[in-house]
Length: 345
Image (tube, rainbow, N blue to C red; front, side, top):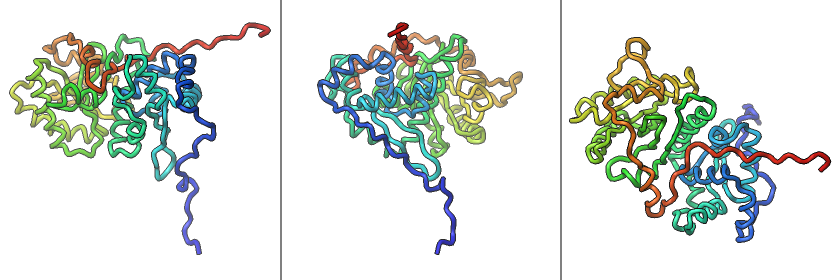
């Protein structure tokens, strides 16, 4: 006898996949893609190659004007095997569709740069393996941080914008002998490393990362700010105490500028990390008059001694073995205009 009632929404799991047949990844199909893929499509493929996985909502933030246009184009790219997709399990509700680079998309990227697919280090099974990776939520969270900034740049005209965004993998290839940031980016005049915290890491381990960044600054002679993104204001307050203790013991504290922000503060600002939510280490209050929080565009002014960005870090990036594609420009190309039919056609 049934003595308990299960609500219908608790039974919902994965949505069934579409029944439309996908194109075979043949030479003829790859040739046909030359007439189908727009510059924005190829930009998206490069973004997926660089950052491994993006959700449908993040792809819309980064490149499309509406959810409808996003769904339509992603369905076409999926059927052409330019992208592949999966939907993680959720106990309640349904997760958004997650997209990775597909086999045909990898062929297109390799051909554009005069490479073989194997030189990209790409394998479809490895691309799809992110679906079961324990760091999936962290990887998606980092991507969401930056796609929301790209969306803000597309909407605003304040002169700021993302001009570089490196993945953790690319950072590891350049700085991995000393430190592995979650991302490196440039926003206006500010270049920074990002540490994206989900709350699962101990504050001791989180704060001791500053020691590695100090070694990097000493090795390169470049002072690069480290931004810590925390999930809540309470977590931020506790993290700032731990960070301050480690930072105070550094020999050259000015070489490792640090600022923190919390995701719940972004909800009351611009809805993303561009708002006045960043508090440099050493500031004690969020009061605008006494100790202001800065917007991301103003944050460079918090450290007057910080040298302007001059290093061209994009040049050596294209020379890394098995990772030779340069990162895509973070701002997508304009959408290809839809051809209007002539009257009477």
